Structures are given as structure tokens and as C-alpha cells.
Amino acid sequence: MFEELIAYLEKTDPVWAALLATTFTWFVTAAGASFVFFFKAMNRTVLDGMLGFTGGVMVAASYWSLLSPAIEMSKGEGFEKVMPAAIGFLLGALFLFALDKTLPHLHINFKETEGMKSPWQRTTLLVLAITLHNIPEGLAVGVLFGGVAAGIPEASIAGAVTLAIGIGIQNFPEGIAVSMPLRRMGMSRRKSFMYGQSSALVEPIAGVLGAIAVTFFTPILPYALAFAAGAMIFVVVEEVIPETQQDKNTDIATLGFIGGFIVMMSLDVALG
Image (cartoon, rainbow, N blue to C red; front, side, top):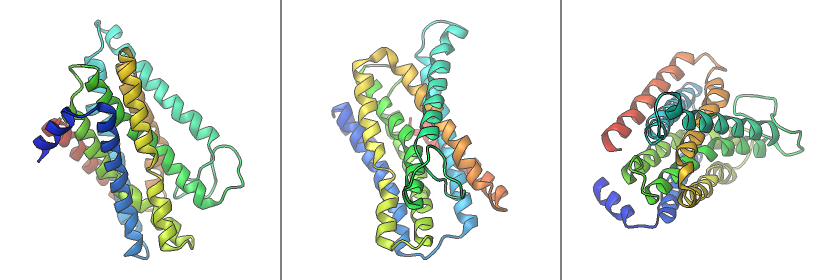
């Protein structure tokens, strides 16, 4: 089945392929958000473990799917070879840092809002926090598909699909992590689901933009891959890990992180 999917996407326009892949990652988020229809609440220990798993997947994807290919496709030796990846990584982190400081949002386990002051409701701010989280994920998938279209040997359809699968896996607990707190705030099940799944709608948009950008500007691919990696690592360190440390489930969250890292590493090596 995996081989058939790769064969189909190899014959598909890269922008369309990026849209399909990131639509899949959105769908998995929606599947996770749908848990709100079946459960009244999510055990805090389980949720922290799932968030830790999410962080592990993102860190592994940042290296195996993004940074490593970015370094491999860069020319030169020594510092010259690693420089595009280093610059892109820094710019990606700074991009998320700028959004974090300007866009109003609220992390799941925190009471104080971040970014510019806003009269928006806590529910809206919570969804915006996860939306920030999803921008680099969609961008990463799109950039890889764009690299394939540009004929870069280090970029492959299998690698792009593997990354989409990994991001989809970690999007499942992410959907739960958004919809359940909204339900606890008193929002209806239907609205909690709608807000939960909408947080990932930015992924297809970012994916298409990433594919288009790399298709037209091939030399930026190493920078673009590292940019997505830097943005993802920023999210993990600034948001995901701190959220798992608010209760007494740090060991569970850490083991979840290790498990997520192993799963994504294994997927990338076995399939990518």
C-alpha cells in the first residue's frame, strides 16, 4: 500500500501532493478532536504522556527529515556546508519567536496569555496557540514535496510521505489536547470539536505555500528545510515540554517523548 501511494504521488503535481498530505495531517487532528464526543474528560497523566510523544516526534522529524537532508544537499566542506542549515534553523526559530510575541494565544496548562493584549476569549486564544504549533509542521511537508519537484536528489516522495505520517500520528493527541480543555471550559461538544480540528487547518495552507516557494526558488531548499526544523524545535522547547511539566507526570511525559522520538526515527529510516 505504501509503495502504491508513493507511485501515485510521484505522478502528481507537487503542490497538489503537498495539499493531499497536509489534508491528511489535518484529518488526523480532527479524528483526535472527535474524542470529545465519546469522553467527558481526558486523564491528565495520559494527556501528558501523549504531549510528550508529540514532542518526541517533532524533534526526531526535525533532524531525520529536515536538518539532515538540508546539510547533505549543501555544498562545500566544514562550516561552509553546515551554514545554510544553521542560518535556516535560526530564522525558523526567530520566526516562531516573533509570532509568539505578537499573536495573542494561551497555552493549555497556563493561566496567563502570551503575545499582544487582546479581548479575545480564552477558547480562541487556546486554539491560536495550537495553530502556531501547526504552521511549521505543514510547512515542513510542503517544502519536502517542493524539493522533489525541483529535482533535488536528497528530497524524495517517500521522505515527504513519511514526514506527513509522523506529523499525522502526533496530531492525533494534539486534537485531543485542544478539544478536551475547551469542553472543560463549558463549551458544547460540537463547538469543542470544531475549534479543535480548526487548529490544524493552517497545515494545508502552509504546506501549499512551502511547496510553491521551493518549486520557484530551488536554491532556498536547504534553508527552507532547516527553517521548518528551527520552528518545530522552538515549539517543542517553548510550548510542548513546559506543558507536560505542570503536574506530577514528568516521568510519563519523558517516556512519551522517548517513544515518539523512536517511532519517528524508525519511520524515517524504514520508509524514507
